[in-house]
Image (tube, rainbow, N blue to C red; front, side, top):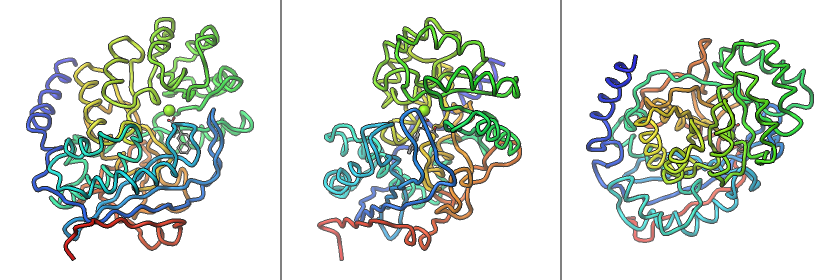
Length: 402
Ligand code: NPQ
Ligand code: MG
């Protein structure tokens, strides 16, 4: 068993990280147009977490153009600064006034050059990631490769789970758990908060004693709740995601020493430095990787590689993305270190209609296909995007050739 893992690791290391073909561009790209667009998609049902409830998702789409080709990305920020301080509004401002102009100011030869061009601007990882994702799609299209191939993906199908929001009543949660299990989803994640934790776990476990089950608190507890959180050890959970403060690694390390259930960090891991420190001091045993939260693929790949080298499992998180963000997540989750089911549901989990064709669907075995087509591997439905758009702004390069 361990030999198989080592052999797979060797092959992965030699095909991808050495010359880093996945992050160095064959030709320099000089973006001459950036389009930012806000698209409102209604949610099929409200989504509630420990920090609030939403009925629709204002999706932030980014496209970049160079050499007559267009790449697509998504800024995963929400409308309100709850999951993170970034919002759709802050990202719009930061891309329009700082990151967009910086991106178009010079030709770029690698993802590291792109990162250096954004580095003078502190924070705003989701805004940075949106542009970087669009550039990566453009780049993959230029070389006629799939995003997955470009990133060093090794899977043709990825395992997926579903995140179930806080419900008005436990019966509604049980109904949704049944529904998604019968659709094949391999893991159920329950959003929890004080007052919606032990009791609902008891109910869910009563009907589903053996499923892969995890919980996500989105920072709803503090170390004062330690004794209460220890009760979660009774439910054979795959992990407890982000129980404590969004920016605290030490408290999580302290909690981890007293819990049998592995802690997984989401909000706290905003880049490779935080991932390194968290693993060093024992804040978590698993990491949820979101390209938006960490500022793009370069950081996501670095965190993946770090965890892979240490045998720490990672999985791809979700931010209620449209098909464009979803397609990027699928490509990322095709990397070998993504050994746990991701929060990558079918488009129909959230939306009546998605902005890509075909939509993302989940097979009865709880997997999603990794497309082989160029770039995202899905068609972008511009007509539907335009139909749902609330705001559009186009940024042009100052010294662009006419
Ligand atoms: C998480 N996502 O893992 C996030 C949190 C989250 C699928 O559980 C609007 C935009 C609302 C982004 C609610 C899932 C959101 C959001 C929750 C992200 O912590
Ligand atoms: Mg989370």
